[in-house]
Amino acid sequence: MGRIAGRFARVEPRLRAGRLVLGLLSDLPRKNCWTIAEWAGEKTPHGMQHLLCRASWDADGVRDDVREYVVEHLHDEAAVLVVDETGDVKKGTRTVGVQRQYTGTAGRIENSQVAVYLVYAGARGHAAVDRELYVPRSWTSDPERCRAAGLSEDAVFATKPELALTMIERFLDAGHSIDWVTGDEVYGGNQKLRAALEERGLGYVLAVACAAEVTTGAGKFRADALARKLPKRAWQKLSAGRGAKGHRLYDWAAIDLTDSARGHRQLLIRRNRTTGELAYYRCRSTGPVPLRSLVRTAGSRWRVEETFQSAKGLAGLDEHQVRRYPSWSRWVTLAMLAHAFLAVVRADEYTRRTGPEDLAPLTCNEIQHLFLAVTVRPMNGLAHRLGWSDWRRRHQARSQTSHYRRQAAAQT
Image (cartoon, rainbow, N blue to C red; front, side, top):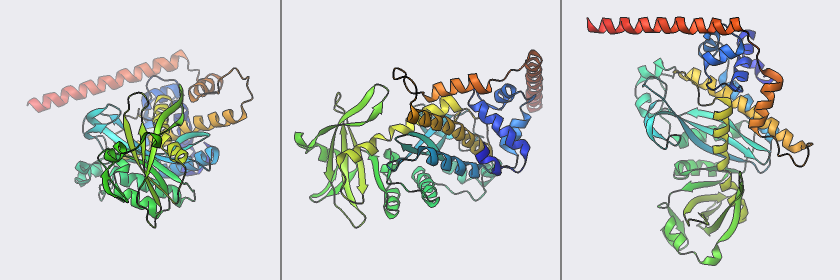
């Protein structure tokens, strides 16, 4: 928390932000301003709500501090930047960015809010270093709606690949270097993103659809048509990285595409050793690279799913109950900081490995459990709990009365 202290204009919101971060790391079954305020010993949730809505502090500055913290402690010369989006199912239409859209969280079209994240993935660990909210055209075409949600009236629509590029360029402009970027078909199918990465001298391994057309020395072909032409000797069994149940072993093959002044291009193909299902990746590097390098980069994409699962399950990334953009950006930034803390402690512990050989390394889940048990578990008495019960019941009574009055007014 000392790293971000300078981002706050006053000491009160800085101290409250520390309590909010501890609340995000708590074992509360639900994490929002109400539950965290009670857990932290505050009398009402108003202070936490003020911190997210109106207090004077720089959320984008904290975001930059999180990035520096992660890169400093998880630094790896072979690290990969992973871009991906995740959605949170929401009710109503007033929460910023919400509309009916596909979200992988639900696996279908739902009323949801979607954000794009940039994850730094290296050998020592992985954590999110940037975030951008996806604001659909239905919002950017309505200035009044944007203003009510805390967005700029001149907010312009940006696609998910454009948001990803904004974050990648922000990472590079901060003075950091990276060799590889990876992402799924949403990003691999976007020619503008690929061209921009090439302009910045970055290599990429980006997933594409089977129908994607690529150009070889013999002409233009669909990716799946090229896969059918491969001989058996073209395939190699390689690991895409360690998983919870061992190495992720697949068959891999690479096909050289037409080169250009911007680098060496290949089509990477992954085959499931059990089902035979194929996946395809557009690859670009400054020069020829071994197949293992492409496979390692492609395998790094699973790190983003692990990051989302951990950040949501342990740090409340998806549990915000806020409607306006400033509150959303503040909540997710502090959640990123909380998860980064766990990732850094895990990386440092894994590096030292001073414990017995018959113990597995500490996981983020175990670190959170020990941290709470040893350091921060609050001891609030009966009077505190009864006070919160009274506050909730008063709030519920006011809400009920307000609903009945509104209903009666509508009927007259």
